[in-house]
Image (cartoon, rainbow, N blue to C red; front, side, top):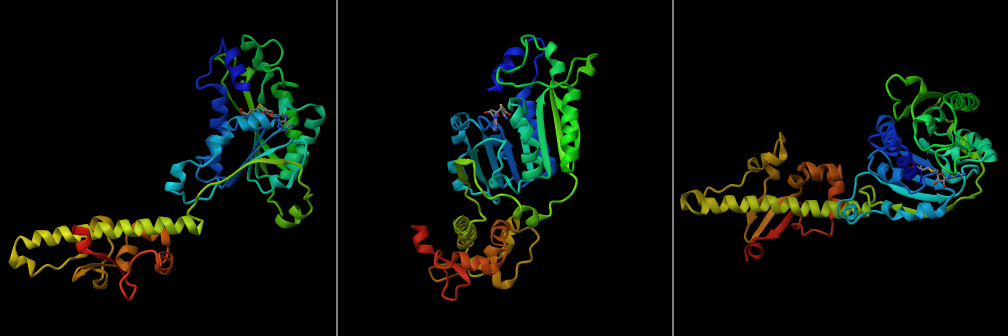
Length: 370
Ligand code: SAH
């Protein structure tokens, strides 16, 4: 909801890209720098930041929290997996959860995060909520990194339509010094360091005014002492989970097996077609046909520098083509998916037609040629 207001009153100074996008980009850049696995966005509103973050490949757990369930529900469907996510499951796992509740309350579902973002949230908190906020975020959640952004009131005179606050729901807007004092005190109490920055540059010559959006990046000074700290924390749940999506991932054996089977069949088909076309070339010349010996040299494009051993060469016997599993395993994509040859054998067992000794994928030529 801040976005429309922001656009309306940035008449004198027009930010390009819009300020809300710059704030979200700031978070994305921070994610790319620190590579957190678990990220929580407090005051996530319409989930637009969460949506942007789901494409960051380092993130495995994303959570949103807002006191207004309706604003979260508006676009929460955009956080669901798409058909393509099922067709091509990602290598990382990703779970996205949305909770309805207040940052003034502690809930164990907010423990264990690496990065907590509070973008344009604190100015919406009333006095009693703001008082509890540092203890909940820095004391209880205690992530390695916290990002807090809030309007810089010193910038307001440069924004044409801002009479008092930038948004009717704002309970306050702070000057740079006010934000600084509050942030330094919170950091001191809970063992964080804080760096100040922002987005939305002031016009040339007015640098003293500071950024339109002021940002504090808090870094926890000491590592969490794991279980001890967690066990001291209350376990009572107060938030209500309103959305949960578990993305298909190759970390899940079911999706890995499907991906490996498809890749094995695809790879075996490539080898078979190559073999058949070479055999056809030879068959034009009866003298050469007798000398036909398929060689893995013709797959060097796929295999790179790999040394192909004799037992890995595909062969034709009667009406069947045999493509050794060892050959298929040497193709980079199969290799990467399975990790070990044993895993390959285990995943395709009973799912792909194999030779009687189980060492090669078997295709019937007759069937294919019809
Ligand atoms: N972070 C969003 C928008 C922030 S607007 C963005 O970057 O665009 C502030 C949001 O904080 C609103 O959605 C509001 O419902 C939510 N909010 C207000 N008080 C809250 C509280 N006590 N706990 C959690 N969320 C709160």
